[in-house]
Image (cartoon, rainbow, N blue to C red):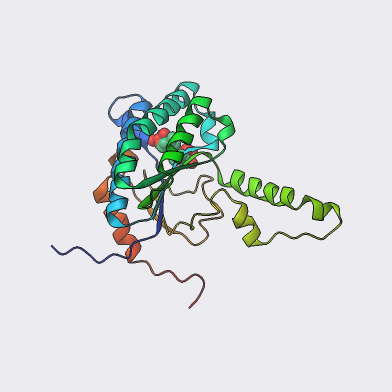
Length: 239
Ligand code: IPE
Ligand code: IPE
Ligand code: MG
């Protein structure tokens, strides 16, 4: 069968949801679902490279997720360290630049070191940027952007100048300033909300919701999302 001609998005972002329910369905601990979710990240990364997608970003841990039970948080952070160590050779092999965005102040030194090492090692890779949003929230990002703007204009403000912040100024101070806004946002597990993810950057993003739980979201499911995207007509307010 001939493959449908698809209009490939430049930046796909995913709210990976449903790991806990996937585990529960199997009578297992939530962490079992998170582990299987890592496999989905690997499959989707490979698929994104095959498809020529340039940016794949995933919401891995929100600011609000810090309110989960300590054991789950600890398990997730350990899993993160392990996954980064395990996957680094693959990133090198298939040309993936690895990045992490979020409030690092709450992460352990060990995890921060692991992240730094992998980001440095892979920074010249150009096939795909894989961006992990970790300890991230959209409101945090906008707030820190505003604070950065005012910090860098302090002298002008002190001198009594009427300093106004434009939308471009705010974008330039976001943690995603060098990343194009997402073209497509996928959320798994049937939830249809933004959960304080990239609030500013998704102003014109196309949304795709699926009932499939994140550990079951692999290449076939990703292809369905791309097919849906290529049928969308994006108008950006024009006629
Ligand atoms: C998504 O799966 C992963 C994280 C938020 C860390 P969940 O852990 O939210 O799984 P459900 O929604 O409880 O099934
Ligand atoms: C959103 O999932 C955050 C991540 C996927 C990291 P949640 O499961 O935390 O979201 P809510 O609580 O259902 O909105
Ligand atoms: Mg959830």
